Image (tube, rainbow, N blue to C red; front, side, top):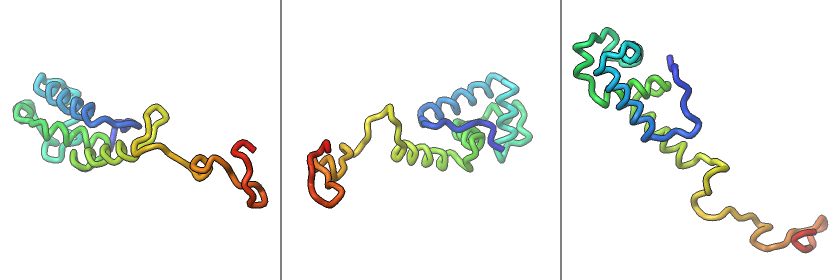
Length: 121
């Protein structure tokens, strides 16, 4: 069961750093990190301190991905890529050039009866 709320504007580098931090916490013997691994890593539900000494970054990434409800790190990474590519934010400039409308291209608009009038009226 996912326990973390996935960020609205996810950053892959931030998620990688979460995995690295989880691995460091595991190697330091952090009990909360150990519980995360036991809950979210399919091969390590009964992991002990010795098993965690051999945990890899890929294992930590899997735990982070599953914590957010993804089946694997590649699935999480692909989701972030898609969200980044197609996501829109009022705080970022659009990619792919300016957005134009028919009205902006021609500088005028059609009136109620199909006649062209000035752009402002």
